[in-house]
Length: 222
Image 1 (spheres, rainbow, N blue to C red):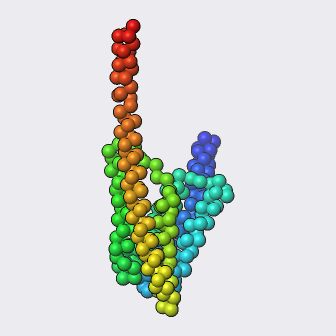
Image 2: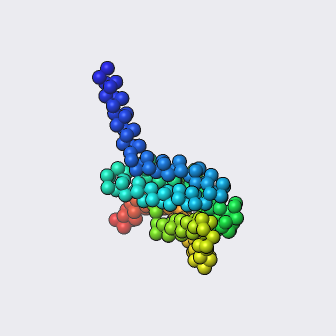
Image 3: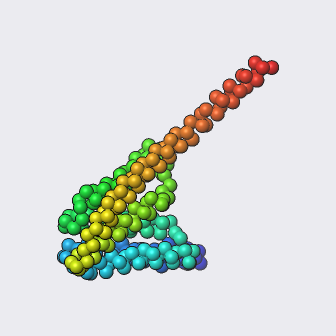
């Protein structure tokens, strides 16, 4: 009986440790995405802008709380970037469908993420190992310009007087450029990682041959 109680308590503590406050905030951000998309499709652009800004605030908040409370978890490391991707990809998809941003930019953004996901899956299928995904400066710049693009677009839709055409056009170009550069960076990293995996697999096979070759050379020299 006591063992059962201890097991239940341990399971509860583990669940609380995984679903901590930062992770709960991240899950709320994911849950807000359908609401944001509904506001967009209903042309309630002010409400959509508010939800999008709140999502950005919670993104910074959950990361700060995780650092302050030292409550980083594997779940948080997975769902936090997932929430960002879902929000941005769905934003570009709907805004492009409604004709508020250029379709070429939405295609670049969505294609980049799809290619990365498919590429990682292919690498795992080929090697049996998963590649460690670490954020890069280029990736952060890419995410920043995507966020600015969506924010400026929502601001333009919220108030027709706040168009800022030059700033918006420059942001579109910078966002597209950052997406392109980031895609090539991920591709180069994936190819380098695949080369390293190939080298690691060859090393155990080549070392016995090298040792045998050294032994033969020592015998001949003796």
